Image 1 (cartoon, rainbow, N blue to C red):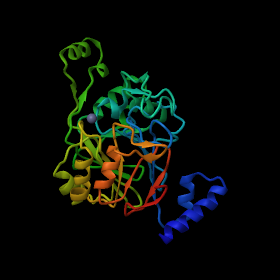
Image 2 (cartoon, rainbow, N blue to C red):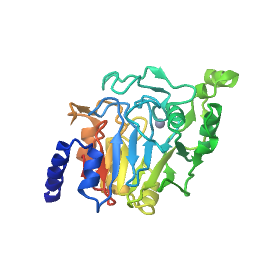
Image 3 (tube, rainbow, N blue to C red):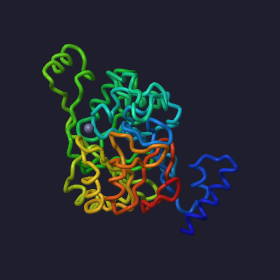
Image 4 (cartoon, protein in one colour):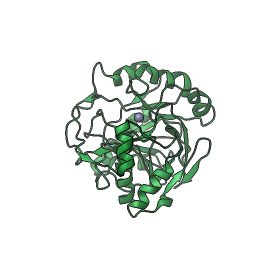
Length: 330
Ligand SMILES: [Zn+2]
């Protein structure tokens, strides 16, 4: 507790100097470089139904946007800043972004604004074009993104592959994909034309291979597991923990479509065993006035998990050291 109090005191002093939160952490403890994680959700300070997007900032400055979904207001969203890399776990509209907020904080937490269509490109591609980001995906998704970039004047080579078992290092961050037990159909609206219409009429989705999760190794040594949408898999034990040794996890708790709070807690407690976990993908209002809502899936997950659960409040930056311990903003 002593160190937390010391950090809080130092943070308060720096706040008086009007420095942003990310600078506070970096300056208060230069010997313990941290990865900053900033949720870009639907409403500032809350955890809302559509929230998936997280920005990870490596100590070296590389910035990675994970699953932009519908809460990032396109490439012009002023919260984005520089985005070097975009990760898309799978092709479902709430992850790649088939629609989006008009502007940050439009709509309400309970009734999210998804009024702007991102078809046929996707929010992820629109952001990549605006920010000249690399899109790093696994499975057979890279050719889909390469084609979308090319069709819109971007560089198809910016769509990069990291398939199961391999990895690619971009901006000093090593990126690997891992199993996610889920589905990965491409909405025919991305395909368009007569073929797209025929597929839509027949109720058939396009195929770009398996859904994925990610394991990231940052330059300070922190290894993070981003679950994507998944069920319980043996790989969470044998691959994510045994091989990659993830210390921070982002875990979906939404239920119905993927693990619910009880299954997610089992995955954390018995399989991945990270030092801390960020809840994600609640598909309901998780917080009210920044506090966990009583009776919510988020509350159930916090109670069931044996390690600290951090709630992704939109716009609130958290900092994690190499061991996966939150050292600021949690
Ligand atoms: Zn999904």
